[in-house]
Structures are given as C-alpha cells and as structure tokens.
Image (tube, rainbow, N blue to C red; front, top):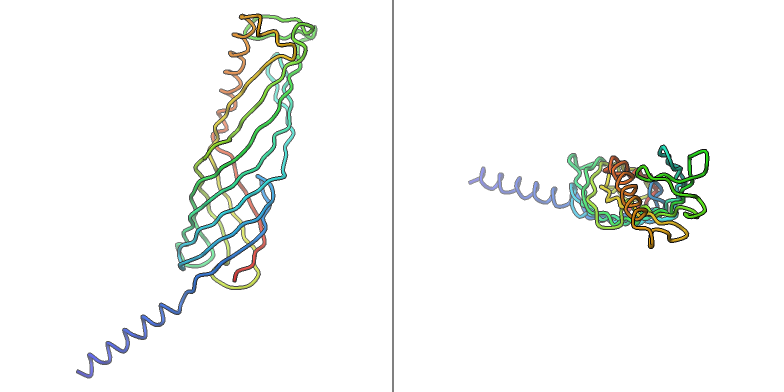
Length: 223
C-alpha cells in the first residue's frame, strides 16, 4: 500500500513537472533575406511544435541573360508570404519546417540584338530591327502557391529578445512571354510562331532553376 501511494505521488509529480515544463509562447519579429524584408509571427504551442507566418517585400534584382542572338535585361520584383509548420526535434532552438509559400516574382524584360547588323534572329529567321522596334517580354518565376521546406534556429522556447535564421527552398513555376514593340507578330504568322519557339527555349533554360533559395535572418521578441 505504501509503495502504491509512493508511485502515485511520484507519478503526480512527473505529470505536474511536465505540465509546467513548457508554456506556449508568441514570438514577433522582423526579418530580411533573399525575398525582401518584413514581419514574422510564430506561435509555439508545444515544446516541439509551432506555426509561423511571414511576409517579405521591397527587394528587386537586376540581371542580364544572353543567347546567341539576343541580350535580355530586366528587373525582377520579389515579394512572398509563407505559412509554415515547425518541428523542434530536440525541443530547443533547432527546427525543421514545411509549409506553403505565396510568392509574386515577376520581371519586365527588354531584348536587344546581339547580331552585328542589329537584326533579330528567331528560330533561324532574320527580322529587321526597324520592323521589330524593340523586343519586350515578361518573366514569371512564381506567382501561385508553392511548397516550401527548410531548417532554422530560433529561441522561441524562452521569453525575451532573440535572433533567428532560416534556410529553405520553394518551388518555382516559370512562364515566359515575348512580344515586339511594333506588334509585327499580330500580322506576321511566321514571326508569331518564331517568338513562341523563342519563349519555349527561354523557358527550358529557366526551368533549370526548379527551386528558389530562401535565406532569412531576423530579430525577435518572445512573450
């Protein structure tokens, strides 16, 4: 009987200790990374689990891309919202995360001829620069819901100020669209077909970037 009471008392102490071992926390912070800058919030409702959400914007990239015939240049604007489920395997700072990203990554592109005479060549056919005007296009890296996975480090199990970091990837959904400033493709079926072939080649090259790296660093406060 005494042993039973002792075991019951020990069990009660263990339950009480585990109940008091972790209290849910709310963390808010500011972050910067490869998708821009913005706020983040995280609710750690268990020592091993939390849900997090963030939104970033305000970062643009300028770049050039050359084919044998055309030099493409443009600015890509980035913004993204990400909702994640975090798992802390050691009940500490390190975590694994997975969720869904809603990015808006698009670019306006301008194309100039790489040929000595200033002509444009698409699919083996030559077109005068005067007839084309300039080559305009749009590049969409991702603008719909995309899967996201990553790993990170944060001290959301403790109250007070802290820092956090995360390394992840989200998938892309590339789309390329080309047109001429003079609209010649609307009356020239061959040019319209050649532009579609040029789009296909560019998209094949862009599809090699099947994921976009997401690297973030931030400061936070845990309540």
